[in-house]
Length: 302
Ligand SMILES: [Zn+2]
Image (cartoon, rainbow, N blue to C red; front, side, top):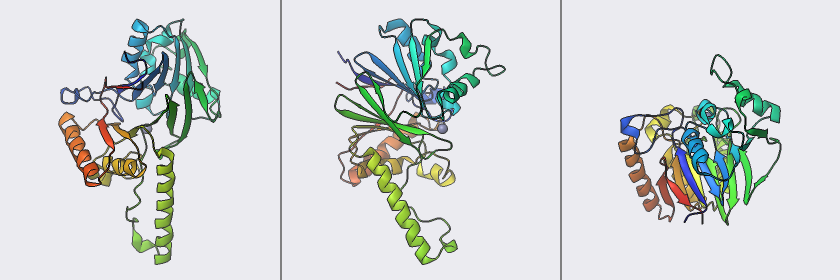
């Protein structure tokens, strides 16, 4: 029996996609459960946290839950008003996320449930709720060691690194990853010397990004755009899947899970993205294993 696992509960970026053509991949927004020997860690609280909450209420003996929020965009918190364990007195729920203080994190979470946006406020939560100090550099949760770093995404957004069972997991659902070979935009505005400096800065930033995820066993990464989409949406804070694959190969990642699928991409489109991903990996002669994150996918950590 699998004791420790990762389970995907929501894999869509931006907004949910409860459409017939998307059901194979899944329509809920980001939520990933990491369960190690009964310790429940939840990454993000998109709509996927609702069925996860129902499962916890029905099955789990463990009543301690830590929720890591990467940021407070709606697609990452919209499941909280319907998260069953928060309305049950036997649960101890802690939150961690980006912010200046515990009070600010609490306010961000409270605000989306205030009238007129929602009829029931967080004062109705009867679980024991706590907010971890956002200035903590590292968090220990059961056997898990958790650290975080900043992503390229509007506002302050984190990626989380979790070390457990001699494995490294990186969860970074919203991030525009760099490419070292992208041409400088509007090169006519710069001198040759400035272009050389800009190119070196890009390479330096790329090295920093690949260092962060180097040798990661399991990378769960934003892969919202196709190359065609990305041309129109540069700077929006999401990645093109081809850039993510190349970055994962450069960083010697072992297993890559493409995540935060565009709600406009149906199952057929996502299958095409997967086939193209395998081609890129083969052409580069890499041993990277690539997967599409799908709702209810479970990965063993034993
Ligand atoms: Zn976002």
